[in-house]
Image (tube, rainbow, N blue to C red; front, side):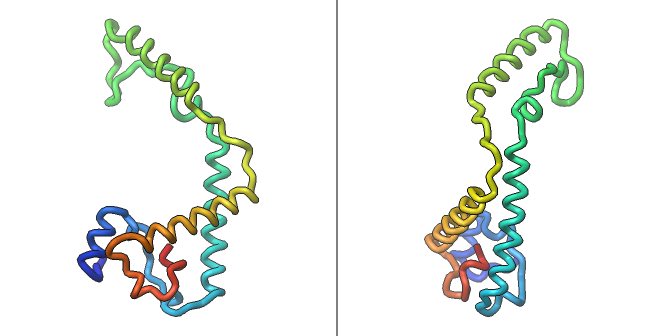
Length: 144
């Protein structure tokens, strides 16, 4: 990726703004229709992700009911370490269960509002970054 200025280079190194950027000829000029198309596609992706997240159960992902008696590299635990590791596992699982915030039911309308709010927050964050290329971008909404 080519960097426009030293300030821009430093900004992307600290923020990761550049990671999801794609070049689009359509974004070179202001176009409300193009923005609406991008907005709708990103909103759909956001809604799919939020719906998947709302279905996640702590037990199925983080700490299954079954204790895996092996090291991370696949070797089995030594018999002397098994009971201690099992006790620690279930203590951590219980702490996680207590701290786990049960996701509320998926509400598409609320998530659309959350997406719009997140977009505005990213917009503000981008503009306030030092070395931001705001002078070179006609419509900040495409960048965000």
